[in-house]
Image (cartoon, rainbow, N blue to C red):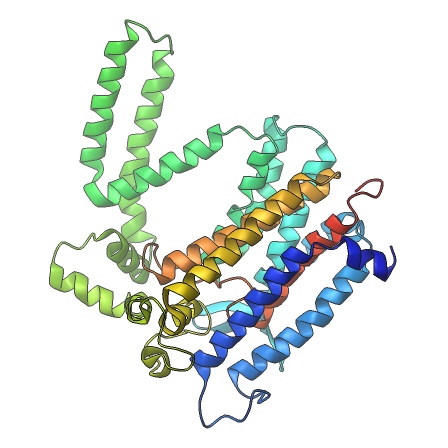
Length: 427
């Protein structure tokens, strides 16, 4: 495909939103890190200057991606995935610890976080495996291997510790559901999460009593109309109670104190108001200050470089995971709504592009892109406004960081390259 044909076939709506998000993100990074001690916009010793440099590298990177053949990524997906796993393993020997996580390689001029690139590699690997089996994923063996592909990198990043990235890898299960894996698995996952949360809030005894009442009602109705075997139902009840009993052990002995405090804050587990407020202002300090910054922005915001909480450094790491709070304070409801609309349009557009693919690999990879971006966007915004516990993952195309920007750009533009070639035989 010639360069002229490629430009015609690219989805320019997605590219326009990408450019807007990167640009708006940089403006807010500039605002949240601005200091009169720094030089101009091109002061590369400043955070906003470094981000500008990352953006320039990113443009060169996406041009390279678009210059490759579309089937390059399908052909070499297994190799790319293997390299990403080797890089994750290498962190345990050569990794650099930043903010308590050994998730980086120090390259001198640049700190590389391989988990960001591993997300792209895993999305490619999942799409490759599912397209190779060429059938609905109904067999248990196929389901096992598909889960294993996304489970391996997740296991490698959890001890770093990087639970946020691990959660993002698990987001690729949505691709499996799109391709025919029984919804039964999703139901099990949601039920387990519900039991976990309810056990923390109410205790195992109440869980056993409520489920026992439900079981008793079921047994009474079963005599009249239900024909479901009794033994599996009782088995599910016993397994659920055992799982509930294990929750407190895991919470007290496996979770670190900071994790317990975050759950206590999120679920209001601490009944003493003074202690809860203390937790809120220590472990929950970032979220507390982020909420206050967004609240202070009002409808129209305080204006560019006018955010008092932003300028006062009230929100730690505001240019990374909490960049959305800068939007809220300086641009108000109008600004935050604009960002949310842009992300929503991009995600819906990518779903549309995924559905129109002629090639199964491209379609599955497209849904992998949507899954990863959606989880990042949903969790980051939820964390910043206080409706989700602090996990620590960046806002795509928006937060400061070279690895994240390169990873999200590769994720998106690999798919846009595939989409530009969708009418060609095989794609």
